[in-house]
Every structure is written in C-alpha cells, then in structure tokens.
Image (cartoon, rainbow, N blue to C red; front, side, top):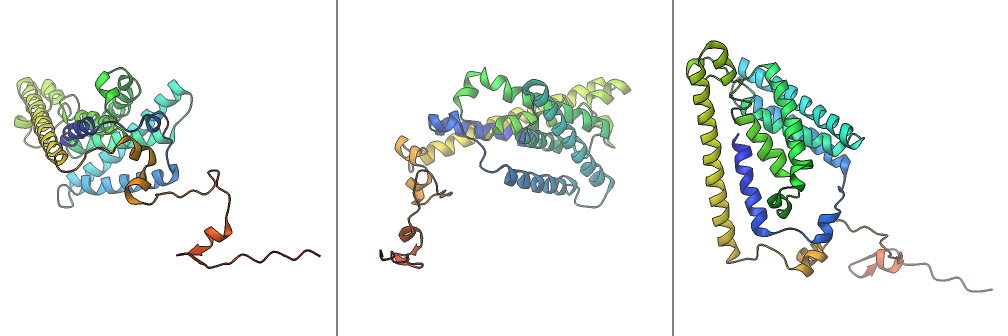
Length: 284
C-alpha cells in the first residue's frame, strides 16, 4: 500500500523537474530487452525473498507469502499479455515485464494475509487496471500527459500498490487470527461483521491519504531547497547532447553513425599508435 502511495512523490518530483526533450519523448526504444529480462528475473527472485522474509522466521505466513507472490505475479503477467494481444494484436515482452512488476507490487501488502484464490483475483486486477491507466487514461488526463513519467512508475507502483493496500483488494480478502478486529470486508459480510470490515477499509484509506500528503509535501520542499543551490533541470542544449555534455563521455559509443573507420584514430591509446598502419605499397 505504502509503496503505491509514496510513488506519487515521484510524480511530484517529475512535475517540478520538467519533461525530457521533445524528440526523446516522441521515440525512445528500449536499449536492451535481453538485459531487461535478466533484470526482471532478478527482481522477481528478490521480491520472493523480501515478501517471504517479512515474518523474520520460517513459518506458515512466510510460505503463504511466497506462494501468493508467485500466484499473483504470474496471473498479472498473463493478464497484461492477454490485453496486449486483444487490443494490439501482439504479445509484448515489455508489457509482460510491466505486468510482472504490477503483480509484485500489488501482492506485497497482502502476501501473507490472503488466500490463494484472492491472490489470483488480485493478479487479474493488477494486470488490467494499471494497463488501462497506462494505455488509455494516460493519454486523456492532462496532468499525466504533462508529467514525463519515463518508467511509468505511477501506473506500475502507485496504481498497483494502492490496489494491493486499499480495501478493494487486500482488506476485502484480509483474514488473520485476530479477525474480529482486523477482518476484511468479504469475510465481514460472510460472518456478519460488516461494521468491522468497513472500519478496516477506512483505516486503509486514511493510511494511504496520510502517506500521499506527507510524501508530496516533503518531496516538494526537498526539490525547492535543492533548486536554490543546483539546477534541477539541464538547459535545452545539454539535453540535446546528453551524457557527453555532463560527464564528457558517452554511455554507449556506437561506431557507425556516419563515421568512417580511421585506423590511426581507433588504434591509438593516449595519442600513441598501438597498431600503426602499414606503409603504402610502392607502385611497380
């Protein structure tokens, strides 16, 4: 829940810093999808560790958290893929990774306190609602179009995290030993404890709103203070040049952008020719 709420502070920071250059926003293909998949696999594996490790012991809660993490994430990934196929005609690897992330984020607040069937429902919701906000609402809501959310953090974390924490999901299916005081709405309706179910819903909503307000205010203050000492945004010329303007070097020096191979240049180290060119042959 709180991971979703505090990601709104990231949205506020992006709003204060401003968007990237126009040409970078129009087309920015992924750098390396294979490395993205490797990172996604590491992320999923690591997420299993901290969801399952939350109880700080080997227990039923830890086992349930690990199981629900995999169930919700796999369901969310498949849901995102199905939506991509239905509306765009092709399954997207990037979309599958986004669905994986939304599933991991959504199940985290509820991993050890919901049953497996509830984790599957949460996976369907986390694979569809963030997909809708990213693919449809993002293009219609003015503030989302203005803010340059490069990594789609608002959709994959704020929306998905709130789905896991707000009463629509986690607290609907919430059931622990002391259920009389902390029962979810679904079980409250089933057992006649409706008041307790709605009470827990109110607690969750209040917690989300509190975290949002605190993080947005704190982030705004930090950015405004930093802006008095260092610029939060590069000028347009530096944005066009990129890394070379800031660091004096490029992350990817790709040869072939209209440059002809020069042996005397590319075979030199600190101005010394490591592999000198062979002298031209004398004409007969």
